[in-house]
Image (cartoon, rainbow over the protein chains, first blue to last red):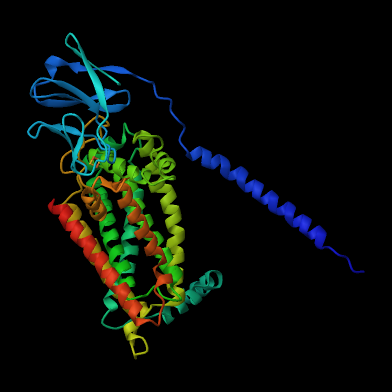
Length: 145
Length: 353
Ligand code: FES
């Protein structure tokens, strides 16, 4: 007796295929989600005490913690206080103040910024993010603009 | 029970005889370019040094931001011959990348990637990427300043790639910044993920090499070429090379012990004179030279995409350069020479800079 099984076969193949596919998805979805690190909600800090005026010599700079990011606090030769994000806009290195050249410098690829945070040399494509600096007596308070 | 009985007993169960037959049949063509045939085996040898020294280091290394630096310090100051094992691991890694480059370029210039060896080439390029990934992930593990910034820049480079960049950066870093989470992740890549993948691909690569035998450079094809038995003639020569390599490693490790540097600090400026490992130097130098803006795009994005395209080209070389066309062959040789010159020149500039 001739039996036409193609319909049944197609149905079974379909069941098998979708079942297999669903199993794969069920296995890989959690794995992919697992290896994606969870978003940490950042404590939104808007201002921070970055140091004391007396501790910062004229024409020098220092790194301070702004939440979990580094900031750069500068006291210029003229005594003016400036603060920037210390994260280089090029590829994420941490910049420093260069007293002899009176500019901000990134050692990673020789990026240069002037005292207004403008990128003036090397590969950085954007200026540094600038913060607002206030003094409360001796204390230097830096806040996001 | 004599030796012959043991041999037969084992042969029955393991089929050593057939493996030995394959080894006996294997021959190496002897011609003026034969010297290049040694570099694949040399790379494999240095890789095995990496496996052994890596496992040893694993016995003392502790992968967290608080303990990594200290544990490496412990290895090199307290553990007997710890300095030696660590130094050999670092030096051998570098020599391995060097021999890998030599192996790759010699295969390239001898057009050994042509039919039927396209897949051998593909697996080889994958092994190159894996080696670089080993180097990059291993570099961070001592958790020192240089490594910290190298990892920042390296992962950020992945991050600037349009669309996939950001998720990739978070995946690599284990978050938005380079932290202890990154260290743990890199440790996992370095000692588990990469070795597992590498083992499979090395196996494939070697199997393909056995299957197709050694290729003969197109210029010598059809000529009557002398052959040498692989076993024992060529193998013994290989062995001499490996003994020399052990000597070189011991000398380098003893005379120039690998430095540990200062512990990483997420709140310190990048130190002056910072530069990556030599095999990344040409890319690093390129990034320094690219202007901040090209048209309206950030310079580094263009540079990085260009390198990505370069890497892709490497993969598809065998499909672009087909046999039977000497002119095309010449074009590929010229491109190869330009690439080598570019890499060498920028590496030198990088060191002088
Ligand atoms: S990361 Fe600052 S110049 Fe490249």
